[in-house]
Image (cartoon, rainbow, N blue to C red; front, side, top):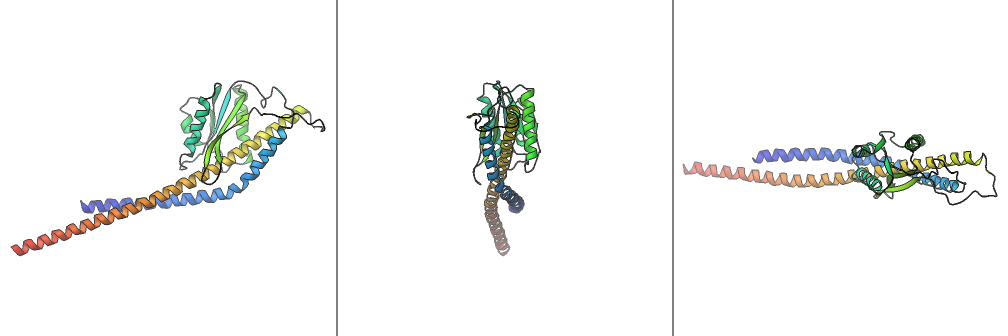
Length: 278
């Protein structure tokens, strides 16, 4: 029995050590990738901010997809394609479902990422899902996603769009955030001191599309950074847990080995005494 326990403990320790090597490697890969791309997030935020300032200075054109007052809300969910990032993906889906439940005119989901597709396909409200579109999102990827959204709202006669994604606060905190993508909200009219070319409708539609594109690019990029840091943190925690488990298994192995040696010594002594008595 003792030798059997020793073998099991030794195998569990070796298996845990192998797992720890994998989690440590994944932690390093996620950290390296995140550190490489996080440098660009502020410039994307600034570009989206100034795009918003520009669009709000342009006089809106009514009865367009950018200013529609139609009923119906599309919920866009941005989720990871890969797992092993803790509760990051499930929290995004949970937040998306919460948003949908609180909408009186909810029409359906448009999902990006395998994590969201697995959860949302069971709701029967998933209009469209895209998986494995990108590793690190580019402007072309943002344009692809935005065109999908425009196609859906035109086809389904939807007026409003909400986006759920992972906001990057810092390396330790990544939380779901909800923003209103459409309709675009306006505060100001065109400044009469300036002349605008081309005509106001063409100018508005081009500016509105570029504004939404910058916003979507920022969302996809920020969500990816959040995913990478969430994976780094999850793998770091997994590595620490593996270390603790290895320590416990080592202690249990040593105790079992000591008990086995003690038992063998007792059996030897008892055998020697038996021979002397004979």
